[in-house]
Length: 71
Image 1 (tube, helix red, strand yellow):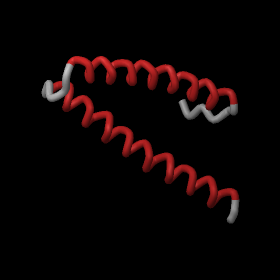
Image 2: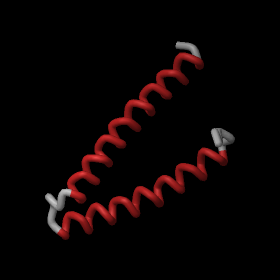
Image 3: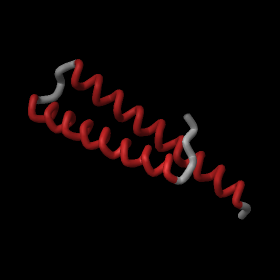
Image 4: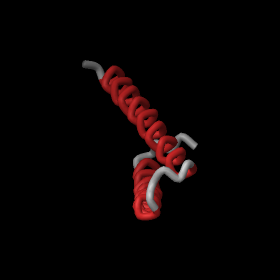
């Protein structure tokens, strides 16, 4: 398998996973807005969001470090 093909496969997988995560994210928002979850569950979701925010910062730093900054 060529490097270009492997790169495209990686991009396709990342894109698919991104779409799955965004769908899950918006499902959580809908649940919070609809108040269909307990306050404890909302607190857990808030904690998850803070952890995700931190992890995205780490990932962004790594991407910049390896020279793949698209912005």
